[in-house]
Length: 90
Ligand SMILES: Cc1cc2nc3c(=O)[nH]c(=O)nc-3n(C[C@H](O)[C@H](O)[C@H](O)COP(=O)(O)OP(=O)(O)OC[C@H]3O[C@@H](n4cnc5c(N)ncnc54)[C@H](O)[C@@H]3O)c2cc1C
Image 1 (cartoon, protein in one colour):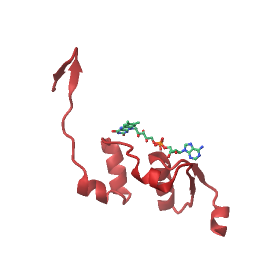
Image 2 (spheres, rainbow, N blue to C red):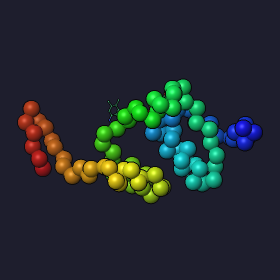
Image 3 (spheres, rainbow, N blue to C red):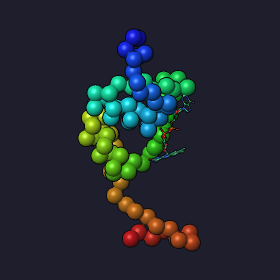
């Protein structure tokens, strides 16, 4: 644990932001410690998002953590606009 005490980057929260930041720093050779108040089980099972923007999926794939996303994700092609209760597709 001596290495942890020397780590200069502390990240509060193991949500998507904290975990992706830690991952990106690690790829640059920068260690970090992520401090999370909830349990590991909570972090791993809490659903953060059903729909991810293209930029998010590109980042996860490009940085090597997109295997499950590619294998199990469904690509969403549609855009729906709704006015006065009526849905219209462009
Ligand atoms: C119902 C719902 C549906 C959503 N659907 C989508 C979607 O389809 N697509 C999409 O892109 N986004 C969606 N979002 C938004 C998405 O979940 C958030 O944008 C994302 O979770 C934000 O990530 P974050 O890491 O900033 O924060 P969080 O996910 O909130 O993570 C913060 C973490 O920090 C921890 N924490 C907080 N304070 C402390 C502390 N003092 N010390 C230690 N740990 C701490 C918390 O326990 C938590 O684990 C949805 C959100 C909700 C609620």
